[in-house]
Length: 320
View 1 (cartoon, rainbow, N blue to C red):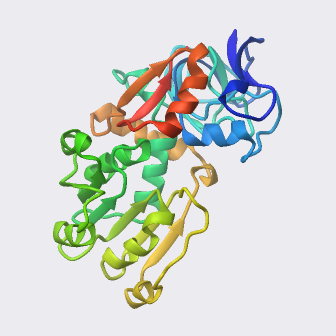
View 2 (view 1 turned 90 degrees about the vertical axis):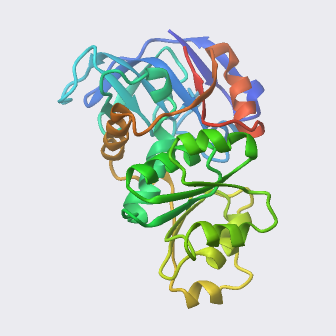
């Protein structure tokens, strides 16, 4: 089969398409013919060596979706021909930027009929992170208000929909070209993140302050979150551009009894559990993964550049 691999760490130019053996399912694995493999910023961290993969040469790609073509021993509840969505690959397992990928049975869920497998290929990191942040960690409840920073991003646009499906009032930030689409995806209020009065606008949109905040840029918004959150608010941090994050006034957070949770999707005990919830939402139409652009295997280097450089709504997906 054809697979994208990097034989050494470096920039996107180290990615190349190789001919390799098609994987065979080990005990507890299924082999999936890849219809879509989402590209995420974390893929570039593995390629650069900031995160260490288990071996080199390495196939990148954390996310996948497609049809099962082989089932290993000890795997139950799935058959050849079933469509599945998977995530959590490429750290300790070969990734999904290939024609076929072997997936452990704790990292996939079956897809309901009618779900586009290309779009589902971009769901894993984005939607599982959104689910874990809002539901598992923050305990978002119906009628609460959630603030989603960066609603046009991969995680952001999934989080808007997960929060809406949970019955919350959804406030999000994005550049103006994406406001109408985020409104259609379930946001109650969409605010331009560049406006000078953003603190006041969030307060007005959330009746005094959001109960839950999902923050993808803690270096920019850690103090902002404390300033705008409701009393007893829960803030979940999923990333930053600069790891040196800190408060300028932590008294605001203490005064409101705020709770902070910093998380990584890779710490999920069993990825198949939130993946199953995500798949169900896609099946009911409550979650749509927007595919901003698709790439073939020879263009994965371009996808790695674009995911770190371009502004787009949704996900970039490789279609082998």
